Image (cartoon, rainbow, N blue to C red; front, side):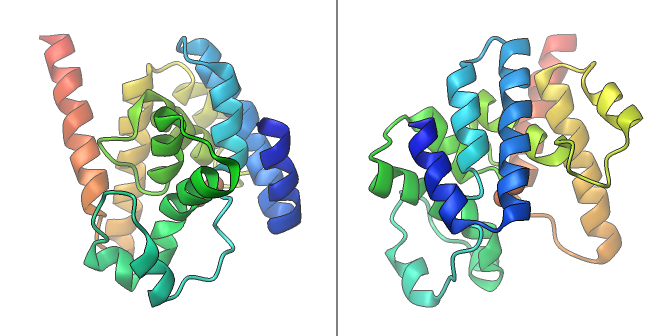
Length: 191
Ligand SMILES: [Fe+2]
Ligand SMILES: [Fe+2]
């Protein structure tokens, strides 16, 4: 499956995004091995997560999206937010991939979502810290790697929401719901 998807990605994504996808896959494998998750699935979500990132999106395509979730007003106004959901549809329709863990991880990698699962958290983190990301310093990466999976995710959600607030943008609702879910889990673990 990995090789098939990789070929598709090579043909459909720009070189910088292909490089980003390969690096993300590499970090996903590392994080999966750290946290006891399936490394093969990690490699697959990494290579495929941005599979729909360069796909033109119009209202018709949005209407055809039937993954069981509503399309929010925010997603309609800012369709780039939907590239994970379209990506999951490509995996399902073109590759007959039915693994829900993989589909949910790809579907929700952009802003995060309470349904993304631990594999989704791995992807969310790897997407943010992969070595090609110029905004990440080696010391930040080192610090992140010392945390557990929920702490890592919370840290990145915090940074992203501070950035969005600074720019005057709204924080996506699914990010906030994920933040609440994980911080409640952390609180219960520490009490
Ligand atoms: Fe993405
Ligand atoms: Fe990405």
